[in-house]
Amino acid sequence: MNNKLFFIKEAIKVGWEKAKQNIGPFFLILLASWIISGIISAFSESHDERSALRSLVALVGWIVGVFIQLGMTRVILKVLDGGKPAASDFSFNADQFGRFLLGTILGGVIIVVGLILLIIPGIILSIRLQFMPYLIVEKNMNPFDAMKRSWAISRNQTWNLFVFSIVCGLVALLGFIALFIGLIWAIPTIMIAAAFVYRKLESAAGSEVVPVESRAV
Image 1: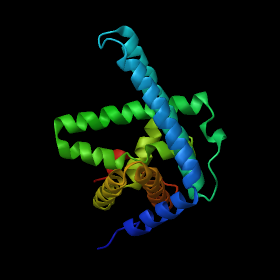
Image 2: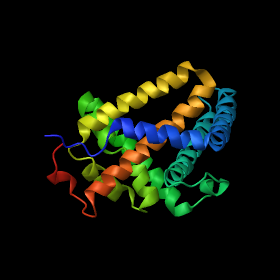
Image 3: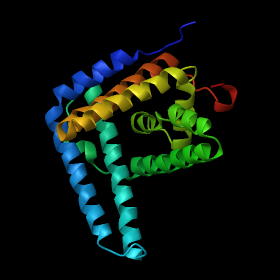
Image 4: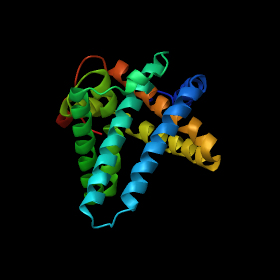
Protein backbone atom coordinates (compact mmCIF):
# COMPACT_ATOMS: atom_id res chain seq x y z
CA MET A 1 0.00 0.00 0.00
CA ASN A 2 1.37 3.43 -0.97
CA ASN A 3 1.14 5.69 2.06
CA LYS A 4 3.39 8.46 0.80
CA LEU A 5 2.17 11.89 1.87
CA PHE A 6 4.77 13.77 -0.15
CA PHE A 7 6.90 13.27 -3.25
CA ILE A 8 10.63 13.88 -3.06
CA LYS A 9 10.92 15.16 -6.63
CA GLU A 10 8.20 17.75 -5.99
CA ALA A 11 9.84 18.91 -2.76
CA ILE A 12 13.25 19.38 -4.39
CA LYS A 13 11.67 21.16 -7.36
CA VAL A 14 9.84 23.61 -5.07
CA GLY A 15 13.04 24.15 -3.08
CA TRP A 16 15.02 24.80 -6.27
CA GLU A 17 12.50 27.28 -7.70
CA LYS A 18 12.06 29.22 -4.45
CA ALA A 19 15.81 29.36 -3.91
CA LYS A 20 16.30 30.63 -7.46
CA GLN A 21 13.74 33.40 -6.92
CA ASN A 22 15.54 34.57 -3.77
CA ILE A 23 19.16 33.78 -4.55
CA GLY A 24 20.34 37.34 -3.80
CA PRO A 25 18.96 37.52 -0.23
CA PHE A 26 20.10 33.96 0.48
CA PHE A 27 23.59 34.83 -0.74
CA LEU A 28 23.75 37.76 1.71
CA ILE A 29 22.32 35.74 4.61
CA LEU A 30 24.67 32.80 4.14
CA LEU A 31 27.67 35.03 3.53
CA ALA A 32 26.93 36.99 6.72
CA SER A 33 26.50 33.79 8.75
CA TRP A 34 29.77 32.35 7.43
CA ILE A 35 31.64 35.58 8.19
CA ILE A 36 30.26 35.69 11.74
CA SER A 37 31.12 32.03 12.28
CA GLY A 38 34.59 32.59 10.87
CA ILE A 39 35.28 35.55 13.17
CA ILE A 40 34.12 33.63 16.23
CA SER A 41 36.14 30.56 15.22
CA ALA A 42 39.27 32.63 14.58
CA PHE A 43 38.93 34.37 17.95
CA SER A 44 38.47 31.02 19.67
CA GLU A 45 41.48 29.46 17.93
CA SER A 46 43.67 32.37 19.04
CA HIS A 47 43.42 31.20 22.66
CA ASP A 48 44.78 28.13 24.38
CA GLU A 49 42.46 25.14 24.07
CA ARG A 50 42.24 24.80 27.85
CA SER A 51 41.49 28.47 28.28
CA ALA A 52 38.18 29.37 29.96
CA LEU A 53 37.84 32.26 27.52
CA ARG A 54 38.08 29.88 24.57
CA SER A 55 35.31 27.72 26.06
CA LEU A 56 33.19 30.83 26.62
CA VAL A 57 33.73 32.01 23.05
CA ALA A 58 32.81 28.53 21.76
CA LEU A 59 29.59 28.63 23.80
CA VAL A 60 28.74 32.11 22.51
CA GLY A 61 29.45 30.93 18.98
CA TRP A 62 27.07 27.99 19.39
CA ILE A 63 24.32 30.25 20.76
CA VAL A 64 24.82 32.65 17.85
CA GLY A 65 24.55 29.67 15.52
CA VAL A 66 21.22 28.68 17.08
CA PHE A 67 19.98 32.26 16.67
CA ILE A 68 20.95 32.21 12.98
CA GLN A 69 19.19 28.87 12.57
CA LEU A 70 16.05 30.37 14.13
CA GLY A 71 16.18 33.30 11.73
CA MET A 72 16.72 30.99 8.77
CA THR A 73 13.71 28.89 9.81
CA ARG A 74 11.57 32.04 9.78
CA VAL A 75 12.99 33.01 6.38
CA ILE A 76 12.41 29.57 4.86
CA LEU A 77 8.77 29.40 5.96
CA LYS A 78 8.21 32.94 4.71
CA VAL A 79 9.78 32.21 1.31
CA LEU A 80 7.73 29.02 1.02
CA ASP A 81 4.62 31.19 1.40
CA GLY A 82 5.79 33.51 -1.37
CA GLY A 83 7.34 36.18 0.85
CA LYS A 84 10.75 37.79 0.64
CA PRO A 85 13.55 37.54 3.24
CA ALA A 86 14.02 40.66 5.37
CA ALA A 87 16.33 41.80 8.15
CA SER A 88 13.35 41.71 10.55
CA ASP A 89 13.28 37.91 10.17
CA PHE A 90 16.37 37.89 12.39
CA SER A 91 14.86 40.06 15.12
CA PHE A 92 15.31 38.82 18.67
CA ASN A 93 12.28 37.39 20.48
CA ALA A 94 13.37 36.17 23.90
CA ASP A 95 10.45 33.75 24.41
CA GLN A 96 10.74 32.14 20.99
CA PHE A 97 14.52 32.02 21.14
CA GLY A 98 14.34 30.33 24.55
CA ARG A 99 11.99 27.65 23.21
CA PHE A 100 14.11 27.19 20.10
CA LEU A 101 17.32 26.92 22.12
CA LEU A 102 15.80 24.39 24.51
CA GLY A 103 14.39 22.42 21.59
CA THR A 104 17.81 22.33 19.94
CA ILE A 105 19.41 21.03 23.13
CA LEU A 106 16.73 18.43 23.85
CA GLY A 107 16.62 17.21 20.26
CA GLY A 108 20.39 16.92 20.13
CA VAL A 109 20.60 15.00 23.41
CA ILE A 110 17.85 12.57 22.40
CA ILE A 111 19.44 11.86 19.03
CA VAL A 112 22.94 11.43 20.50
CA VAL A 113 21.61 8.99 23.12
CA GLY A 114 19.86 7.06 20.35
CA LEU A 115 23.07 6.90 18.35
CA ILE A 116 25.07 5.75 21.38
CA LEU A 117 22.63 2.96 22.27
CA LEU A 118 22.15 1.78 18.70
CA ILE A 119 22.77 3.66 15.48
CA ILE A 120 19.41 2.86 13.88
CA PRO A 121 17.28 4.33 16.73
CA GLY A 122 19.35 7.51 16.53
CA ILE A 123 18.72 7.78 12.80
CA ILE A 124 14.98 7.19 13.29
CA LEU A 125 14.83 9.81 16.03
CA SER A 126 16.65 12.38 13.88
CA ILE A 127 14.22 11.71 11.02
CA ARG A 128 11.05 11.79 13.13
CA LEU A 129 11.99 14.86 15.20
CA GLN A 130 13.36 16.99 12.34
CA PHE A 131 10.21 19.14 12.10
CA MET A 132 10.42 20.39 15.69
CA PRO A 133 12.04 23.75 14.71
CA TYR A 134 9.25 24.57 12.24
CA LEU A 135 6.59 23.80 14.83
CA ILE A 136 8.27 25.98 17.45
CA VAL A 137 8.50 28.89 15.02
CA GLU A 138 5.22 28.53 13.13
CA LYS A 139 2.91 27.10 15.79
CA ASN A 140 4.53 28.69 18.85
CA MET A 141 4.75 25.27 20.48
CA ASN A 142 7.00 24.49 23.41
CA PRO A 143 9.79 21.99 22.60
CA PHE A 144 8.03 19.01 24.21
CA ASP A 145 4.78 19.50 22.29
CA ALA A 146 6.77 20.21 19.13
CA MET A 147 8.63 16.91 19.51
CA LYS A 148 5.37 15.02 20.00
CA ARG A 149 3.81 16.72 17.01
CA SER A 150 6.84 16.08 14.80
CA TRP A 151 6.72 12.43 15.79
CA ALA A 152 3.00 12.27 15.05
CA ILE A 153 3.01 13.90 11.62
CA SER A 154 5.92 11.75 10.44
CA ARG A 155 4.18 8.48 11.36
CA ASN A 156 4.41 5.88 8.58
CA GLN A 157 6.69 8.22 6.62
CA THR A 158 10.03 7.14 8.10
CA TRP A 159 11.34 5.36 5.01
CA ASN A 160 10.20 8.10 2.63
CA LEU A 161 11.83 10.71 4.89
CA PHE A 162 15.02 8.65 5.04
CA VAL A 163 15.23 8.55 1.24
CA PHE A 164 14.48 12.27 1.16
CA SER A 165 17.40 12.93 3.52
CA ILE A 166 19.71 10.95 1.23
CA VAL A 167 18.58 12.98 -1.79
CA CYS A 168 19.16 16.19 0.17
CA GLY A 169 22.64 14.92 1.04
CA LEU A 170 23.36 14.38 -2.64
CA VAL A 171 22.15 17.91 -3.45
CA ALA A 172 24.48 19.25 -0.74
CA LEU A 173 27.34 17.17 -2.16
CA LEU A 174 26.77 18.58 -5.63
CA GLY A 175 26.76 22.07 -4.13
CA PHE A 176 30.03 21.34 -2.34
CA ILE A 177 31.63 20.03 -5.53
CA ALA A 178 30.57 23.25 -7.24
CA LEU A 179 32.28 25.11 -4.38
CA PHE A 180 30.98 28.43 -3.04
CA ILE A 181 28.32 29.24 -5.65
CA GLY A 182 26.94 25.71 -5.51
CA LEU A 183 26.45 25.85 -1.74
CA ILE A 184 24.69 29.21 -1.99
CA TRP A 185 22.06 27.45 -4.08
CA ALA A 186 22.11 23.98 -2.48
CA ILE A 187 21.61 25.04 1.15
CA PRO A 188 18.38 27.05 0.67
CA THR A 189 17.09 24.44 -1.80
CA ILE A 190 17.41 21.73 0.84
CA MET A 191 15.94 23.86 3.62
CA ILE A 192 12.94 24.97 1.56
CA ALA A 193 12.35 21.39 0.39
CA ALA A 194 12.35 20.21 4.01
CA ALA A 195 9.89 22.95 4.99
CA PHE A 196 7.69 21.93 2.05
CA VAL A 197 7.67 18.34 3.33
CA TYR A 198 6.84 19.58 6.84
CA ARG A 199 3.86 21.54 5.49
CA LYS A 200 2.65 18.50 3.54
CA LEU A 201 2.79 16.22 6.58
CA GLU A 202 1.31 18.82 8.92
CA SER A 203 -1.58 19.43 6.53
CA ALA A 204 -2.23 15.69 6.09
CA ALA A 205 -2.16 15.09 9.85
CA GLY A 206 -4.82 17.72 10.52
CA SER A 207 -5.40 19.12 13.99
CA GLU A 208 -5.09 15.90 15.96
CA VAL A 209 -1.87 15.51 17.97
CA VAL A 210 -1.12 11.82 18.31
CA PRO A 211 0.61 10.68 21.53
CA VAL A 212 4.11 9.41 20.89
CA GLU A 213 3.71 6.23 22.90
CA SER A 214 0.70 5.06 20.90
CA ARG A 215 2.38 5.22 17.52
CA ALA A 216 4.74 2.80 15.85
CA VAL A 217 7.55 3.82 13.54
